[in-house]
Length: 242
Ligand code: PRP
Ligand code: URA
Image (tube, rainbow, N blue to C red; front, side):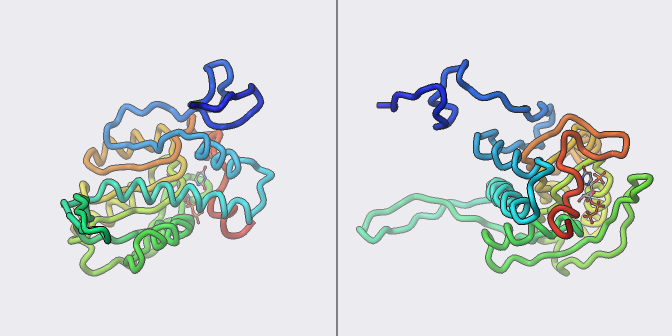
């Protein structure tokens, strides 16, 4: 039996009547099948609220971002190929389960994407990680490629591409072009991202219709400096230097 709930108790959306549900900004609806938005649970919205708050200090920003990154990695892994795997339990019964199949690697778009590497390592112990250093020009917002170092056999792997912010989409598009030039097919790339803009998603999905994007939230748009709004400001600065 469900507990009696008063209007001021916070025990999750299923226990509330419509009129008792709290109001929060909602993720923008996206029409592309290859873009997966994480389930908009109260936990996720509370975590996003923490990292969006300009008054959140660096330690909390890192802690709560890391929790969202973990959710993104767990969801991203759901898109890898699997095969059936039956095991015997300690009480001698069988359990028909699954196991992952296929080699993977992470690729972070530096600097901010490096913040997502530990979350991937926490789920995939000795995962190989490549790096692509792309920086957006502060005046023009155009991305510039400085450096890449990728696993030699990347063309045989599934790639989890990591960058928390997806604004115009320019940096991610450039990174995917590098991956494709090394022989990685679009359909074997999963782009994991915390906050996306509708413009970035449209640009990306039009160019790479077979590539999957997993994002925590699609925001309202971009401001005149191509920052995501409402956004959270500069992710790299808040995670690494502020
Ligand atoms: C940020 C972010 C993305 C890019 C998003 O990186 O991490 O890489 O901007 O913008 P876009 O979609 O318009 O290309 P930035 O270049 O600011 O560098 P940083 O990682 O050092 O913060
Ligand atoms: N990079 C960020 O860190 N934030 C934005 O809003 C856009 C690009």
